[in-house]
Length: 134
Image (cartoon, rainbow, N blue to C red):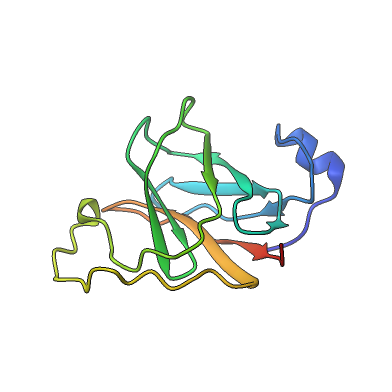
């Protein structure tokens, strides 16, 4: 992972707010190229740019938790909001049908969280989003 300058973020087609972080491509074609902003408090709207996203039902792994049912209008961008708590139960779409303790939603605290896009057959490279104090 490396921090890109504002010109590189603009070339990625992203509106530079607080930075842009470059990601990696998985061998299966699911990739995360950048995330903007690179930091912000709980409630921040985040854009992931990459490739291989489906129109519906994308899953973003945020730290140890999961954000489900994320849509993509163009298969190249995903948008999510930094959650107050992390859903620790893997979505059924990932094929992990093991029982999960419901109600496992630890609060998101300031710090660094790895962000990736996952599916049943692929996982993108990771980028880091830093959660800041409100």
